[in-house]
Image: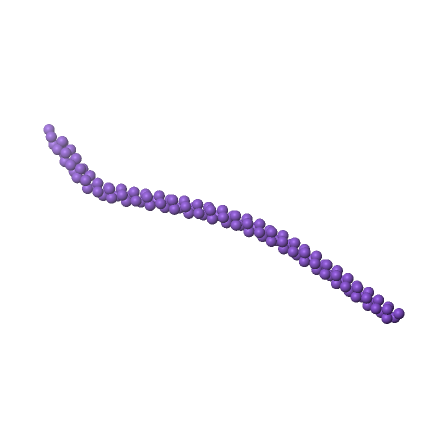
Length: 117
């Protein structure tokens, strides 16, 4: 009878120890689930933030490319104007000696007109 009582007591102690271990494991499991839920929420927030930043970056790149295209267009227009200026300068340098000769002719003619009675 005493052995049975001792076995019963040990069984009860073991049962309480196992129940305590089970409760501890449940608490640990709940804590891990809460951490996982928090991690998933954080991951979701980070994904949204990355998507927002990615979209903003695409917008900036598009604007930058548009600005670069505009600068290229302006540079091409400037080169065209410089080519035209060059051509006009060459034409002017070719015309200027002729104008000088014509001016001298006109001056001589007008002088002759003034000398005539």
